[in-house]
Length: 183
Image 1 (cartoon, helix red, strand yellow):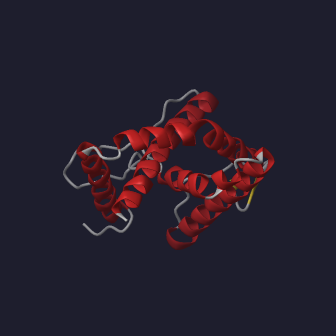
Image 2 (cartoon, rainbow, N blue to C red):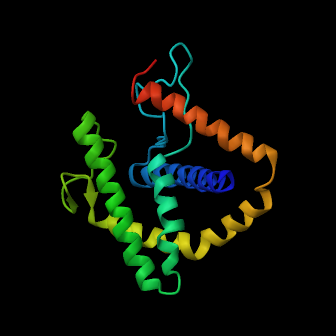
């Protein structure tokens, strides 16, 4: 049970970090501005009162998306057509549900696609929907096997356990502060 939890955390944090890289590069390539898009980099959100502004290079939505690809989409690995379309569908669904819930529960809009090819009140975009399918293929065919090999190599290392659980505690504490305003 703990071994599976560590595997989930490993994939979650790897893909959340890679999502940070993808988002930051995408913004840079489209606007020419280098703006961090990761968790806790949101303007005016300070993780802990009295501590200078810090941020973690994670985008949780990509972490959850990575888990969806690893545990659902990768089952269709023998059929690239299905990997593309199932990946596109489930990742778009995840993006929509997340955007919709944030918008309806707190009025928060973490992304807003411009008019044109945007739909679902700016939560979704046609090109991004297609990109999710491409990204699912890249993940299934190029990333999952090497990451699983890496995980198996380091799974028993104590430092990995400390790192994963430490990151989890930090994310929970900062989420309680930022998203729930608990302290």
